Structures are given as structure tokens and as C-alpha cells.
Length: 385
Image 1 (spheres, helix red, strand yellow):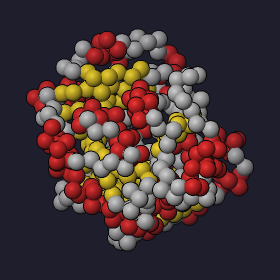
Image 2 (cartoon, rainbow, N blue to C red):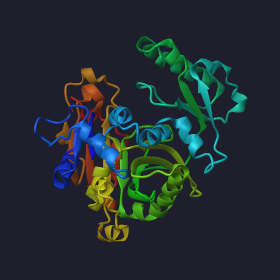
Image 3 (tube, one colour):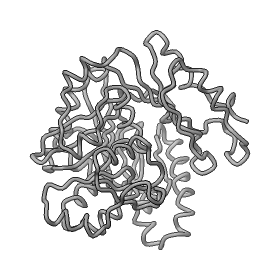
């Protein structure tokens, strides 16, 4: 069954629900009246009580609270916490990566940290997502002073919304910088705990300092190269906690020696905003939602044999203009589409709410890949009205 919530439900996911008659619950008022045949929460709870191998997919982590509150008698809450809490995740995989440096620190103890005990550079980030607080890279002692102040400033609003006890006990994870090329992929664990990979994307960056999510792409060549390695990693991950009937979205880096190091694992879903699973379908004709919920393992040999040699990209049109969204009157989507040989789908997003103009799926011949590289480095000002 499927839980739907904000910020975005794609037409492809809705069509999948209708085509396969998947039970669905709208936990965020994101569907129109009568658009989908919705199930009542009590039926979902009873189904999980009656069937130990029940499966649930959420398009958004906004639905996690519903799962925790209504399905606490299952192992789902345990699985979710292991991956949502970045410190618990590092503990979970410590046996797989015994030399990886990480350290937990409380907000109130930031000034007590001895830099001589930490690798430089390092990353500091909230152990659990907390409002919109972000991730920071520290490259020097002077930089550490700046980042500490930035973190404190970020928590000013949090102190206004939450009790001081909650804010002061907020945990942060300090970890070594992970190097290499970055990838994202969707997977699930079946009723026996076997790992199944459902699509692989490479995350492109415009420079060493770039931390945006502007471009992800997939291709036959990419999947062939990394499928075995990523499947092996997911298999080893599942063995650490005996995961079963559970979907995940995983981000990793692979260095020049081929060593894989995980960045994070997102529970109970594939890529956010219905992105990665939808792109996988466009490129391979494999429907990851159906594969997980119907327990149908992909025949990758056949899928790869049937794929063409072109590159399929997801382009996230984040507001990189340095112009506040409230001052922007419009975005020239037609001009944007003319930049691409074969745009497949354009999703217009309310940029005044999400600071994203939209998402574009494209199909590009290898010799025309410069069009994707150009949008990767664009500040998008040429499209802004």
C-alpha cells in the first residue's frame, strides 16, 4: 500500500496506483476529491496486524509520523530510526567501515571540541533533520569559528518554537569528508531480506564547492558499471539489521580506487518528489513502485539489453539566481525547453513556496550531453522574468 503526502505526487505514481489498484492513503491532503480511491487508516493497520509481510511505500518522509503513530507494533519504526538518525546509521555500519571517523556532539558542547582530535576537513550536520538546518564543511580553525556561529544563528528560530531542553540536547554528527563521485539509487529488501536494486543515477556537480542537486542522470552504461557493486553493498547493509519488506533511497560515493562509502540511507521511499523512480521508468521501462509493492525483481539483463544508449537526466531547477523568489514575476519555461534536444517531462513548481522553478526530465544523445553540462553551471537568470 502507498502513503501520499506533500510536497509532490507525480502523475506517473498516480497512474501506477490506478493501474495496479494499490491501496492508498492520503496523509497530506495532496489529492483531489475522487481522484483516487482511498483506503481508511484502520484497514491499513489491520492489514499489517494480519500479514507480517505487508509492504508500505511513502512518496514523502512527511508520512513517517503516521507510520510511527499507527504501525508501532511492526519493525518499521525501528528501521526508520536507524536511517533517519545519522549517528545510529554510522553505528549500524561501523563493522563495514571500521576506519571511518565519526563523532557525536551536543549543540551545547560545540565550544568544547578539540580540533586536534578531528580530521581536517570534516563535515558537521544534524543527527536528525531539524527544521531546515543544513550541512556544513569545515576546512580550517578559522572556518570552524564561522560554522559554529552559523549553527547557533540557525537555532535562534528553533529556540522560539521548541523548549530550550529540546534545542540544547540536539545532536550533531561530525564525520570525515567522503571523497569520490556521487551516486543515488533506489532499492528494497524482500521478505527474505534479499537486496534488490531498482535503478542507479549519478549526481553531477559543477565544481568542488558545488553542493546543489541540479543534475542526476542514468544510462545503460552507468547501470552496467555499478549494478553489481551497489547490489552487494545493499546486501551487506541488510544483513546488519535483517531488513525485510522495506524500500530505501541510498546516496554513496565511489573513489578512484573503486571504494564505496555511504553518505546516507533514506527510509521507506525512493528519491523525493517522485524523481528517481520516475526517471528509472523513463530510461528502462522498469516501474520501481510496482516492483517493490508487487515483489517483482527486475531482470536487469533483459532490461539493459532493451535500453537505448542515450542519457536520461533529472534537472532540478533550483533558484540559483540570487534573486529572492518574491521578487520574481515568472519563469520562461518555453525558452528553457528550447535548450534541449528531447525534453520528456516538465514539472512546474511554485517557486515562491519551494524556491524551485521546476523539474525537467530529458533524453540526450551522448554527443549532445553538453546541453546538460550547460544547465549544470547556469544560474538560470536568463529564464527569469
